Length: 538
View 1 (spheres, one colour):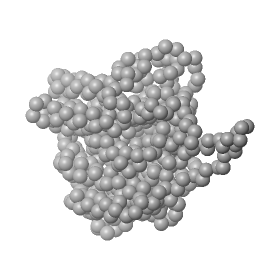
View 2: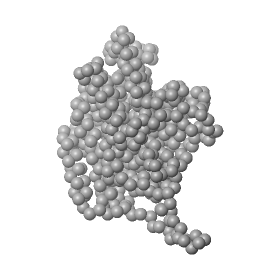
View 3: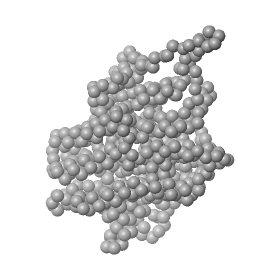
View 4: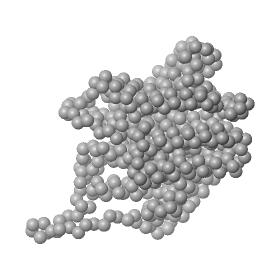
């Protein structure tokens, strides 16, 4: 890479101001619209059962193709793409319904008195208190797909608008919301470990800190590898994102020890979202009250030998990302548990994960989905108070409205009227990220509730798990099962493509071909790993 070309690449992502929030919302609506189309095809026609090559290709087009097109060729008119997804969904919904295949019932044998015994499907069994929820898999899968596609698409200015790239100091953009959404989703998964530990003895802060550091080590190593590779290959980088030496992996690695330190306090806090909002306000007060703090963050010179001045964005923005992470935990505590059903007894928590592979996100908290909680003698511990309402959908409605009010207060008329800054991760950014993600979760949950109302009404665990598999996109499940591995593959392919192709000078058609093949490779690898039941733990 010549110095001139490197300078051009850096200039292409520098001094950008982003775009409008409503445009970002219209682009992001493509993911729930695609989920709706997939759900109607499956619920009305059983289109993805059996999962043939044609079904897999259609799944890829709906889930990955729609998101790639929304950020590129349809970036100027995302409403049109939403219409193109919703219209066939309506047409499919009007077709006669084809019921999903049900497992054949095993003939029951009579009891000692000759009376027929109840079949397994007719006997109510205790259910998992934390069942896998397909709408969370769909939400997180869409987040991973848009992240993987955007990290390469941003290098093709001919198809990826500059207003979608990360902003320089202030403003809103699609990639800005993507960074915060990644942290928010990590918090949702981390809440599962928190829920499982409620009924066991309290671990000491030393034990928690030691375990959190052990789980953060892979993320720290990835950060070091990225730092050395970028510097060693003289790869183009925009230092105002996180700093000269800092990168996003270091931010993720620090979340685990920080939450471990705060855990004794968090155990007694019934509402994590309010704590996250208070933490963001405290951070904003630091930015406001410390003289010239904002000027230091935005305009200060990066002095040689002064590590803090060279990496100030990554260091100070960590408090904002920690608030986002804790807010994600709060939402997870509200939606991961089974909706109350007085007719169903509950069973003790089992090992099954949120979407069969959330280790890479759960590691941010300091716990792994693949590790069972060590059984300890139960003792009296403070329980997390259930928040009204108790079902996932109305809870999401409640928190979406509340975070939207917080965002309005922070950015508009009756509050401090702050400008969103991903670079500082200020109060406005935290409120925007949390309101956006709770709204996205609400839409995915609404699709699941309307299209698949009987998922959790099965009379046996096995039948319930089968229903969950039937209503979950294989593409989304693949991106969740090996999320970190696919994310690293995306980063590797992005580096190779940028080192071998003049991406910023490529025309629209070649750019779209490369993007399509790139997403096909990532999705294909994910589906292959899932088909062979392989989970890569990094």
